[in-house]
Structures are given as structure tokens and as C-alpha cells.
Image (cartoon, rainbow, N blue to C red; front, side, top):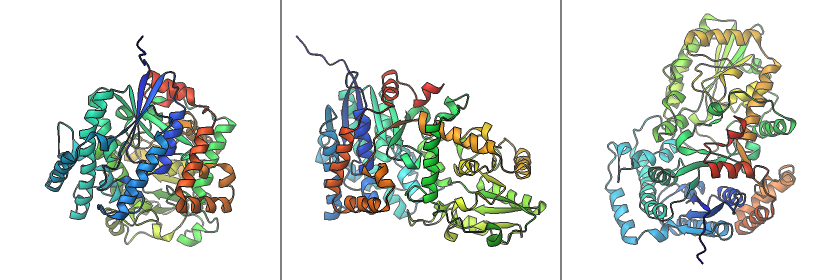
Length: 544
């Protein structure tokens, strides 16, 4: 009698296993998928993307090479893949096993002969490989155009190498297995982007997976949504018609997020730790009678990179009210001249200059410096090098304005009214803050927000929105050793765990895997399995 496996196959595409926090999240996610309904496969690199990749970038290796140092990174990455894939997955597949050395040589020759001119429109086998592999380079060098220097172009060529290897192997793997669903952690990166595109052409639904936007749950909860439908736009806005009221548990998750931002311990937090000692009026020489408005610049290059990839709509970074953020700030300065009873503090985004995360200055930084010279008396500038925490403003300003930055929600949590200039740009509802579709409406909203000042409704609205995003829009996971409360609440344990990870990574990984294996089933497991079984576009289907 034939034993036919009728379960649907869910495939994880995981070429960057050496980014251990992501690999652990994938293992924990896989453990919560119902094996009665699904069989699981995982596709790893196997060392074939050895010229350069996101793992090497994470290890601060920025130049493409095949030295002993980089070979060790590849070797460690293969070991991480084995640790994760050995038990919970039914099938483990390596890209390296699906391509010959001759084909790799051919791809390297093609890459070396590729010229910079019009690189973004490069098409191979009907796949827009130039666009699909551009994201990493554009975001690394904080680009706001596709004009690359020779150094930047050479970086992109390493992404092209990854993309072409992936395209060649994806055809064989996907055509052979034809999975029902594919899950990819951060599919915007080169290899994942190409794999997802080929899956789309074969009619296979691919899901975006990333850690929660809740900093306190970065690796103990994951966001999941349909990559083709939503791209890099959080689906909550299009999925929810009525904002639910947060319960006590959901509110606690929001407060934990705020506390983590204020503490500035996470790599994803740009702002310094809150000091609570800075007097904003004294520092910027603001008169007692003036109302204070902070204008926060949003991260333009991140939005631009997502747009070029085709996973962000034009309206999300180039709105209908102002031409761009330079136009917005120019006109805001003119407004300030006419309204001396207000004082405007312009806060540049930390990504515009070098930060503790990367030593790269954005293309737009010099434009800002030129624009913000010879300002009127009632306009000040907060430069990243001033190292002022965003949290030092919230209890000292009357209103907050931005293009689309999520810091508006932080201000609202603190009761500060938030104003955005274009309702189509923020990833939070128009109903919970001041916004509009014209310049006249924007400047009117500024006056109203500054006049009305703080109120509890701002706090409640921000809590409810974030609670929805963090609770309804994620699947909870046990996390790693670093995420456990007994570690987080002790500076000694935090330091000890970091030392363990750095000096004895294999032992640290074994502990993380033990946590993963022994953890109870997630409270969100049924939500996850329904998503996969029924092909839901996102996790918000329960809230519609």
C-alpha cells in the first residue's frame, strides 16, 4: 500500500543562517507549525554565496573576498544551518548542492563584465535582477538616487552574484518541490528577493517574516504577512476598520517597548539614552512665552530603497502635499518667521550622519546643512552629534510634527499631539493624529495642535494602535537566552550573556536551541497555522 504524504509543504528560505537571532526565530516558528497539516523544508546556502553576503556584513566584513577570515564566517554559517535544520524540518536543502562549479564560474564572469550604466534595469531570464538586488547597496550607503560610485557599484555586484546564484538554484528547488507556502526572513535582501520573485512567477505565496517592531520583543515575536500583497508596508492600516481598545496585557507590551527605546540598549534605536536633565528652553534659548514645536525628519533613504525594490508605493515617501522633506522644512521655516510666538526645533534623522550602527553619511546630509544655515531666531536645529535623546523632548514640547516617523507615536504616548503633513505617508491611522492632504490643512493643524496642547486622548490612541500592531500582528515565540526576563533585568546577566555569545558562540547556541525545544506551544500557534492553511494575507484577519 502506498504511503502518500498529503500534507502541504511549507518551505523556509534561509540563506543567511549565520545571523543567529534570525535562525533561532525560524526554528521556533517552525516548531509551532502543525506537523499534522504541514511538512517542513528549509533551504540554506551551504557556502555558495561566499563572495559576500548579509552574514559577512553583520560580522563587519565589508569588502568581498575569499580569505581565511571570510571562509570561517561561511563555515560557522553552515554550522548554524545544521543546528537549526537537523530536527524540526523534514527536508534540508542547500543551494550549494544545486549548482555546479562551472555555473558559478560563469556567473562570476557575468558579474565581472556587468557595467554600471543602467544597472538598475538589468534583466536576466525575465527577472528584474538589477532592481531586486539593489536594496542592500542603496540602504547601506543611504542612497536617495541610483547614481553609484565605483565602490558602491562593486558592492552591488556582490548582491548581483547572490541573486544570480539564487535564481539558478531557485528554479531547480522550487520546480522540484512546488511548496504550498514559502517563508523568508527579510525577503528584501538580495537572495530572498530573487527567490520570492521566482516563487511568485510559479504562483506560490511567499510570506515576509521579521522580528516584531516592539523593541522589547524583537526576537520573541515575529511579524508575518504576504510579501506580494503588502511588501514592506505594515498591513494593519489596510486591515483594520475600527481600532480596538488595548487590554492590560497588551498595554504592558507597549510600555515595555517604550522603556526599551528610552533605555537605548537596542541596535535598532538611534536616539541616545534619555537623560531627563536637559532643559530644552535653556539649551535652545526659547522664550517663556513661546510654544515649542519639534519637527522630526524621517528616514528618507530607507523609504527610497524600499520603493526602488518595488515594495513601497511612491506615495509613502513622495507625497502630494510637499515635493519632499526639504520643501516641507523650507516652508515650515517660512511659517515660523510669520509666527514668532512659536519656536521650532528641527531634529535631523540620525541616519543622515554616521551613527553607532554605521559610519556612512547620507547623500542628503549636505543638503540639510546648507538648508539650515542662517535660520530665524525662533528656529533651532538638533543635529545627531548633539546627542540629545528624543525622550528629553516629550515632556517639554507643545506639539510634534513629522512626515511619517514612528516617533510621532512616542510623542503621543507622552500626551503630545502629533501632526503629519500628508495623510498617505504615515504607517499609523489618520484618525488618531492631525493630518491632511494640503499645505493649508497642515499649517492649520499645527496651530490647532499647538493651541490645544497635551491631552490624554493622544496617549490612549497611541497605546491602542501599538497594542494592535504588537499583539494582533505578531506570533509570540520563546526568544533567545538574551530575551528572558531574568537576564534582561540584571546588568550582570546581560554582560555575561554577551560575553558568552562572543567567546563561546557554540555553547550560547546550544542554550538557545534548548530553550526553543523545551518551550511550550505559542499562544499564537493556531493563528499562525490558520494563516498558512488558508493563505491569509496577514495576521490581522482575526481583527477584521
